[in-house]
Image (tube, rainbow, N blue to C red; front, side):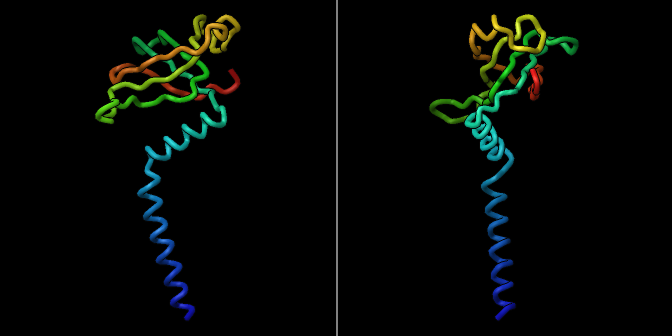
Length: 123
């Protein structure tokens, strides 16, 4: 009787693991994480866009998430990502009063762009 219960529990564990791996792929985990971050108000991301490897030409602060664009009719992923953030006009890494007054700006980053998306704690 105990062997049957143990075998049943092992089978359930294997099935739950397989279902978990299927439904919680890395992309799905990222989507869940991004939605939780947005819901909870975690918006500490920084996006730096580079024209060359030396210095960023544009920096966005307090970016909530970078999202992959999808087509309206065909639901295919587009070759760019987009987001909203404050433009760091004076490149000091902090959202100043004049930058905050302008509000968050929409931006797009193409496939062939060089950019870095990091977490900006304490800025």
